[in-house]
Amino acid sequence: MGGLSTLFCFRASGGLSRKKLRNTAPSPGQISFHVQVSANPLSSCRNIIAPHEALPGPQVGIASTPDEKHTGYEPSPWGDFFIGYKPLQGSEEWMIVRVHELKEDVHMLFKNCNNATARMFLLDTLQHLGIDHHFEDRIDAVLTEIMDSAELSNSSSLQEVALRFRLLREHGYWVSPDVFNKFRADDGSFSKYLTNDPRGLLSLYNAAHLLAQGEPVLEEAITFAKHHLESMSGSLKSPLAEEVKRALHIPLPRTCKRAETLHYISEYEKEEGHDPILLELAKLDFNLLQHVHLKELRAITEWWKHFSGNIGLSYIRDRVVESYTWSYVLYYEKGYEFPRSIITKMIVLITTIDDTYDIHATIEECRKLRQAIQRWDEGAISVLPEYLKKLYIELLRTFKNIETEMPININFDIAYLKKAIQNNVTGYLQEAEWSHENHKPSFKEQINLTSVTIGTPTLCVCMAAGMDNMTMRQTLEWTSGVPGPVVAAAKIRRKCKGDVPSTVECYVNDHGVTGEVAITRIDTLLEVEWRTLSQARFENRAMLPALQRIIGLARSATFFYDNRNDSYTVSMHLHKTIERFFVKPI
Image (cartoon, rainbow, N blue to C red):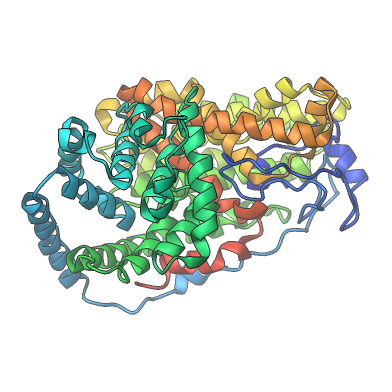
C-alpha cells in the first residue's frame, strides 16, 4: 500500500487506521478477513479481492516521530537503464517512408471494400493492431456508414451484428440492445444454434460488456456467451483460442488497448487470410513509436535522477519507468509527448507526497505540508520541517518548468493542475486526521473521500493537455469539476487494486451484513461504474474525446492491477511487458 499502491484504490483509512496499521501490522500470512468471493459474471477484474490473504509489501501508517524511517520498497529494477540504452538502429528514414506508402495502401483497401460489412471488419482490425490513429477521418466515415447500413441492420450473422453494436457504442453512437432479439428463441432465451458459433459468441460477449444501466438483455448475453465460450475453450484452435482466453479474463472493452495490440499483432500473423499490408504497417508503426518512447524514457529518467537526488527522501518509491508506462498506455500515439511528460511527472509527485503521508510524516507534519501546498509560494517553506523543504521546492520547480517547457501550440492552463494537486493533498490530510482521531468513516464517507485521494481527478486534468486547443478549456473545466465519469473511473481503478479490507469493514458496520455479502455488493457497485462510463459515451458526445481518455484510465487498472498484483509498486510483474513495449522491436 502507499503511493500508487493506494493511489487508485481503496485506501486503508478508518476501522484499521493508518497509525493502527503501522503499530499493529500483521505478520506475513496473518488472517484479516475470512470471506470467499462469490462469482460475478459481470466482473471485469479477475481475482481482485481476497482479503483473507496478507497483502504484499509494507503496512502503512502515520509515523510516530519524524525519525521513523521506512525502507520496505524494492529498488527500481530499471535504475539508469534507459539513460544508457542504445537500441540497434535500423533505417528510421526508410521506415517512415514505408509507413507512408502502407498508409496509402490502407486507404485503397477502404475504397476497394465491396460493402459496409467489409469496411467494418477492416476498422476492427485496425483498432486491434493499434494503427487506427492514422485513419481517424476515414474511420468517422465508416462509422456513419455502418450506423446507417440496412445491410448490417438486417444481417443474420451474430458476429456482424455484435461487432457493429460494439464499434458504434465504443465511438459514442447509441444502438439499442434490441438488435439481438433476432437471436432469441420464443421463450426469450438466446437460441441454442448460436452455441456452435465461437466467433459469434466472442463478438457477443465483448459487445455486451458495453452495457449501460437497465439493459437486462445484455446481462443475459454475457452469461450465455461466457458459459458456452468456457465450455468450448479447450477445443478451439489458435489464434482464436488465445482471443477467447483473454476476453474471458478481461473483456475487450475493459482491457488495456496497448497490451491488446501486443497480443494481437502476433496472433493476426497466424490468421488465415490476414492482410500483409496491415501486418507490416502495424509492426513498423510499433517500432517507430518505440524510438519516440525510448527518447522520452531517457529524458524522464534523467529528470527523476535530479528530482530524487534533490529531495533526498529514502522512503519513497523509485517507479519513474512504471509512471511513464502508465502515461504511455493512456497516450501512446506520436504527437502526445507533452501529455505523457506531465502525466508521468504528476504520478511521481503524487506518489512521493502520498508515501510521505502514508508512511513517514507525523500528523503535525501532514498539516504543515498541506498548508504549504495550499499557499503555493516559496514563502511557505519556513513552516515545513527540514526534510520536507526540498520536496516542496522541487514541487514548485516542477510546475514552473512544465509551464516553461510547454510547447507554444498547447494552451494548457496549469492553474487547474495546481488546484487538482491541492485537492489531492487536502484529501490525504483528511485521511490522516481520521486516523489520528481513530475515526471510523461510514461507507459513504470513505467512498466520497477516496474518490479524490485516489488521484484519478488529477490525472484526468493532466490528460486534457492532449485535447485540441479549441476544446482544451472546456475539457479542463469539465474534468476539474470531477463529473460522474471521472468518479466512475476512480472507483473502478480502486476496485481493481483489490486491497479493500477497511472498505469492507465500513460496509459491514453500516449495513450489518457479513464480509462475504459486503464484498458481493461492493463488486456489484463497481459494475455500475463501468455502465456509467458506457452510458456517458452517448449522453455527452461533446466531451467524447476526453471521455475516451478517461475510459482508457479506467481500463489501465485492469492492466496494472491484474490478478490483484500491484504491478506499479511490485514492478517485477510488469518487467517483461515493459521490455516488449520499449526495448524489444516487433
